[in-house]
Amino acid sequence: MLIKKSGEIPSSEITPKNVYLSRRRFLAGVAISGAAAATGITLRELSTPSASVLAENKIAGLKKSPFSTTETVTPYQDVSHYNNYYEFSTDKDGPAELAKNFRTRPWKVKIDGQVDKKQELDVDAIIKMAPPEERIYRHRCVEGWSIVVPWIGFSLSELIKRVNPTSKAKFVEFTTIYDPSQMPGQQRNVLEWPYVEGLRMDEAMHPLTLLCFGMYGQELPNQDGAPLRIVVPWKYGFKSAKAIVRIRFTEKQPMNTWNISAPNEYGFYSNVNPHVDHPRWSQAKERRLGEFFKRPTLMFNGYDQVASLYTGMDLKKYF
Ligand SMILES: Nc1nc2c(c(=O)[nH]1)N[C@H]1C(S)=C(S)[C@@H](COP(=O)(O)O)O[C@H]1N2
Ligand SMILES: [Mo]
Image 1 (tube, helix red, strand yellow):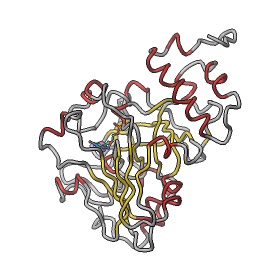
Image 2 (image 1 turned 60 degrees about the horizontal axis):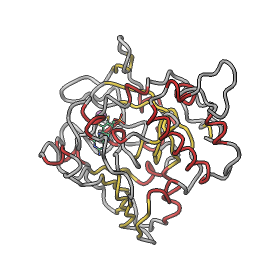
Image 3 (image 1 turned 90 degrees about the vertical axis):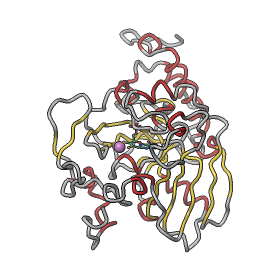
């Protein structure tokens, strides 16, 4: 260790080595990308004692987001080993192992549809577009479990502003990579592949909507959507597509995978709503991973600032 203040446990001693090294590489990359450049971030990072301190938002160089919740962060181990990622497995503990060797570089993202400059962007160019922030968000799966995750990324609007959608662009569609050779789940017809999701333009432009490439102070693990995913904290988890390779601007509302699969169960909007039950179960409560008792689910997952996006809409009809 370069720096070891007394009483501090170096992260290399309590973090698995691969995770620790990946965090170093990742933060070094982020440091040269951000405006703060190399102002000691690497040194500070080396003296950072643990992932839990990172999770507490104390890391230098990562902007603190006013959107962060102060609720207890879910342990990294849970968030990285209890995953919905049907391209790899329908078992929650499957993706961590099966995505281990998934190739996340080189990685291009196609920008097309109703946009002035159709282009293909390298994921590392995207990551460098704006300063990274840590955003501690609640995440509510439609199945009834929830987690609190310190994501790293920046508002999707930062990218959208730079690519100039045309005046006809009313929606944005996200497409996950299609590569059955790497994704065993895509060799089976559990869902229609590739996975697609979409947002209305004003939802995509809302500052809460995150273009995400990291979590817990390090690179996004493959099973959580590396190298690039969307995070929409007021919607059920399935709206937050992982491993995206295409962002398409459209005039018409795009299709989304779970709506194609079961239209009476999963709508396009999928706002977290304790008053609109899933046809097969109640959405009134949720269980935080690691907790025993259920807690009440909040309207818009507690993100009241998005309510005005839906003024006048019947949210039972547009579920
Ligand atoms: N491409 C893709 N994205 C996806 C999924 C998926 O199966 N494939 N599952 C969704 C669901 S249902 C949830 S709850 C979240 C889970 O994200 P996490 O594993 O990082 O917690 O990812 C969403 N994004
Ligand atoms: Mo989910």
